[in-house]
Image 1: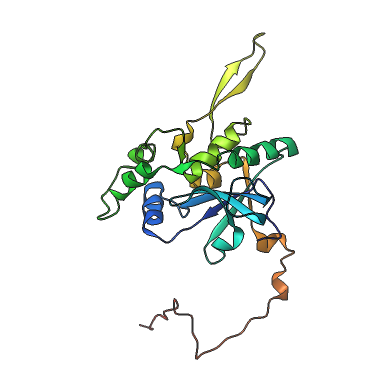
Image 2 (image 1 turned 90 degrees about the vertical axis):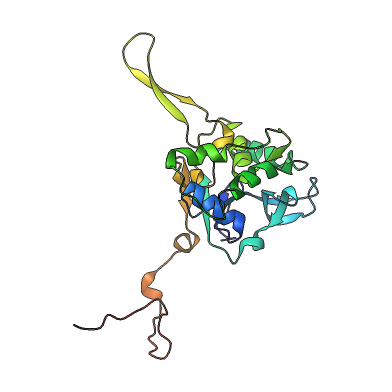
Length: 231
């Protein structure tokens, strides 16, 4: 994954703690966390510095830089903005760096915890509204909303509202884009967005299925395999 990541990529993470379970339930998604890959950061208000860094909003540390190795044992996905200029990529990264002093929006987390134990049935149309709750304090953030703010600050779409508008001369129509409120974005939205490319490191590294060597071991069967007894 290190060889395929580029600064400006969004890394989605399938977390395993209680908060992650709540987020995955509410969003009906595999992804519970998002971080922005920035590559090299040197002494910009973060404790961590060096290469292969992500900037994220952490519940304990607030907005911070962490090494890529933090998520080496978890399921991840790379979402890449398409045709992003170098200038705008730098602006997105700087947007995240400038928020190094922000804290995590714990009220948003407490809102999620109410639905964790026990997990009640919640209508789909309410789930996103539940996630829009929070302190409303501009010095606080959660992972996906902060990244959404960064991209929307350079007018890069994630899941915008789109409507057609008639040209002034009446000879056709064109699309008008409107930003969505950043507080409504969740990690899964970067996966669903038609403006982010899904990058799979295995396939990008010249994957050749014919080069794989397979084996069969009757003493070590797949634990998920359950043979069906003949009638």
